[in-house]
Length: 185
Image (cartoon, rainbow, N blue to C red; front, side, top):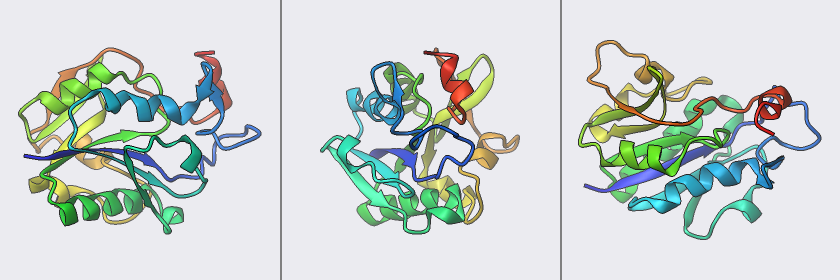
């Protein structure tokens, strides 16, 4: 079975009111996105993928990442997700582990726990709250939204799908505002 880590980083960050895009904004000494890109680097993924869109992040992405540019990023997060899933299908991955570019406090250990669990739908659980990283086997890719500004949220919140929660440490919330970031600086 091959598994790809996928970082979704295509959005405009419309709630962010800082001087530059939130993913470029400094956080603890480096650009915010750097934390999310570095976390899966330490694990045994078959491929690392980042989906870009609204802002040029090329100078911040490590060379071992495959970059997928979402030309339709304005159509919402589902378009980035579908781009990543389409790519995973085309190269023969069996599962993807999804993460968000604006969640700097999710650790490598969380990525590893989700990756290593044998389940087909596995998500991080932070105090009982389902959050990425989220492993989705190809058997469930059709459950993901085809349009709109949602990623895998509908699958994560499902009460009928066989989702396994893996207890994770850290802070899983995304950074949407300067105030969110100030909590950690």
